[in-house]
Image (tube, rainbow, N blue to C red; front, side):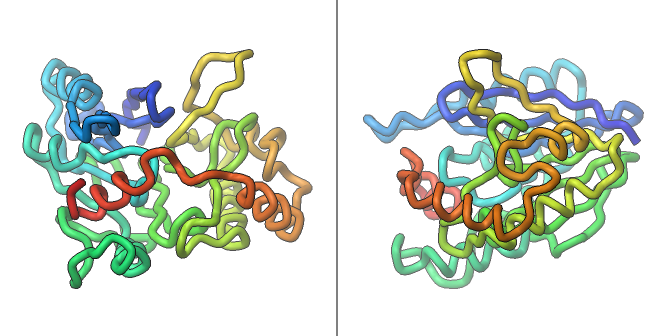
Length: 264
């Protein structure tokens, strides 16, 4: 139950995409792939996603799933492009309907929910990647649609929790909630200590290179926002004060529109 994990760090958006494979069968999932986007010209490119394609083809993997942890506000998803190139079922949490509703008027979105997904996971829904047992864990707070994917001995956190020196996600987007985020994080940190944790972003200080795998022990001991001993009230006060100082992500408008299936 130990998946083969390859991370792909995108320097422009500080995002990490993952190729997760069952070593026994070669069946694979791709998590949170990034589409290159130039906001000055409004054009897209696939260089970052093609790095994943090259490894899938080179290692003769079969892509079974294209998984999104949530509707991203800082990068455009390459999920639709990779489905065209490699096949697979494109999926996200069923809470995406709430995100679509929250932004429907702001972005003049069509009624009926988001486009472009083949499957909407219910909270705690089980699935398989080849011989690997997996589950879509509901971890809302950053957005109401956030999932963390438990695959074998690994959890892919999306934006819920970052490396210990980077803290946690913001909780001020529509439908976000700091108290809910705290409870989602504590749920993850109560998993067995041998569980590997893979983050969706890294914003490394100058003292280290980008990294994306952490541990429950390290997070509980040293996460600057939510280490053991920080209670819910303390976390909510910190998160609300910090979020009030943050600007919207640079690609917020094109990313949310695109990732909800409405184009640029």
